[in-house]
Image (cartoon, helix red, strand yellow):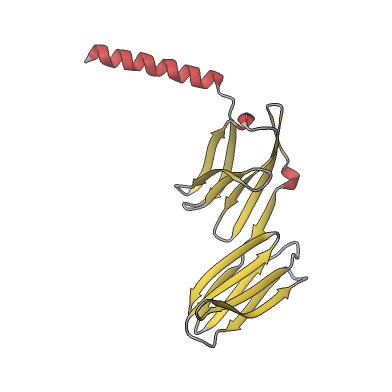
Amino acid sequence: MVTLLVTVIGFASTIDNHVSTDIKATVFTLENVKKGNLLTIKGQSGITLYKELIEKNGNYKKGFDLTALPDGDYIFELEKDVEIKTVPFTVRTNTVIFDKNKETTVFKPVTRIKDSILYLTKLSLDREPLEVKVYFEAGGYHLIHSEKIEETTSIERAYKLSNKGSYKIVCLTEGRQFTTFINN
């Protein structure tokens, strides 16, 4: 038993020394993450290359060997409850360059229903337009309301839902689509 333990410890320390000296990792750190947030790495065409569900609240730190990626432009994307943060980076000849000036935050539209009234709110610091489409399910989803909201930083709308049933709310903003299904 002692011989086995000494062998395992010797092997473990060899692996540890090898990993700590040869790895080319970029340590990516995020503060104030919550369990359930989604971290992705996306390529130039929006294809997801890596996806991880955050498992605990607090600070997130992980090493990635980004130099293994082909030359090109990529983004880290952290999807939280009401916002999506993007951190762009470029890989060129095994060098990784982060561009802090191009980091963005997209605030997601938030919907809730109370007493047959649909409340929709969204923060738009850059005053980006928001297109809202409300569909009612009756043998398929049928468009019952559509509007484009522009030139405002704080979007707040209330919609009276006159029919009992299922609704689909589609919001288009900043090159993204957000879809919510609700029952009235």
